[in-house]
Image 1 (cartoon, helix red, strand yellow):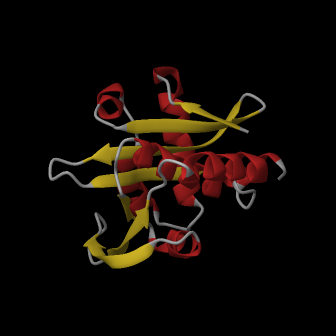
Image 2: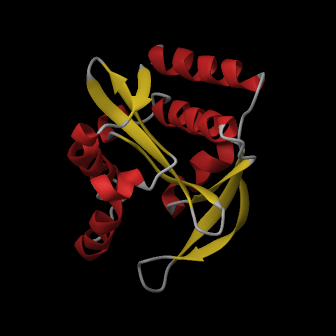
Length: 170
C-alpha cells in the first residue's frame, strides 16, 4: 500500500468512496442525503485543506483522509474513510497514522476528530481522547469529539513504517 497526495482527478472517486463507506452504518436515505453533501469533495474545498491523501493498493484507491485548519486555529481530521470491501485490513489505522505524522510535521500537537458515533471504537483504540460532543447535521443527534496527539520528529519514521508494514501484510 502507498499513501500519496489526493489529486483533482481523484475527487469524484473519493467522494463516492466516502459516501459508500458511510452508508455501511445503515443510515436512512434522508440522513445519507445530508451526508452526501458533506462528503462530496470539490476543487474549491480541497484547496482549503492542509492535507488530503489517498491510500492505494494495486492502482486502486482504498481510502483517504483530509485535514483542515479552521479559522479559530483548530486542526481537524475532517475525513477518514476506507472502501467497504477493504474494512478490517489496517488501512484506516495506516491512514490515521499518516494523518498524525502529516499534522505533526506541520507543527501541530493535536488533531481534533468529530467522529461518526459508529467509528468511536476505532478512535478510542488508536489512543484518541473523548473531549466532548458536537451537534450533528442530523437533527436531534450529537456526535463525539476526540483529540489525538500528532507524531513529530524521531517518532515519524517509526509510525509511518509501522503503518505501511501492517497494511501491506493484510
